[in-house]
Amino acid sequence: MGRAYQNRKMSMAKTAAVKTSIYSKYSREIYVVAKAGGTDLSANLSLRALIDRAKKDQVPTHVIEKALDKANSGVGEDFQTARYEGFGPGGCMVLVECLTDNVNRTIGDVRPAFTKGKGKISTPGTVAHMFDHAAVFVFAGEEDDVLETLLMADIDVTEVESDGQLLTVIAPHTEYARTRNALTEAYPELAFEIDEIQFVPKGETVLNDDESEQFEKLLDLLNACEDVQNIYHDVK
Image (tube, rainbow, N blue to C red):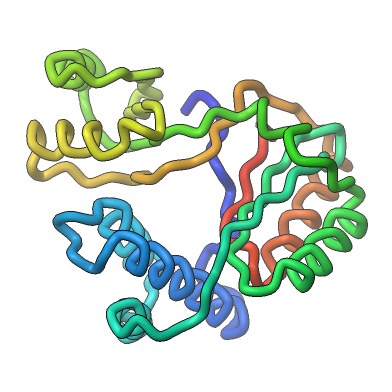
């Protein structure tokens, strides 16, 4: 599918604790996105995409509704975004996005995760410049038709690529809403596999078996941190 996309490592299964963690992460993100852009899904496309993704990950309706109700009430925590950069096994690059109401607690969790995962947290800007902040859409479609649709809509597309089964469209993050609208208007029945703004790596790092095993441990440690929402990396 071309360049690697973010690895949430938040698949459903395994234990009730894992599910609870997933629900909590989605609840927090839905609350923040709804509070910032409103709960009207027709006007807040980021919220609509987020809720669709939550449903795909089997997040219960009551969890979603509770987060929306809290956003509507105007009462709740004040979360802020915190982003940490670092290097993992084999020199791979890692971006960690967090939503936190206590940055001291968050860095106190994230830094040891890097250390235990044989990685190293770095200073801001060290890694981020090797990622593009982009709108990413993955769905079934015909490459030529989709490209023509986007060009006719005057969308500044960065990349359109097919792996034979799914089509990947990458556009600047500022073009997210226009790109999504152009696609859904042209293809009303379109079902997105991925529909979100991500940090997409400009290159790839290939790990050997030992490094891959250690990298998986690093991801697990980071995902176990309460405030971590998304993990982006350049591992192939």
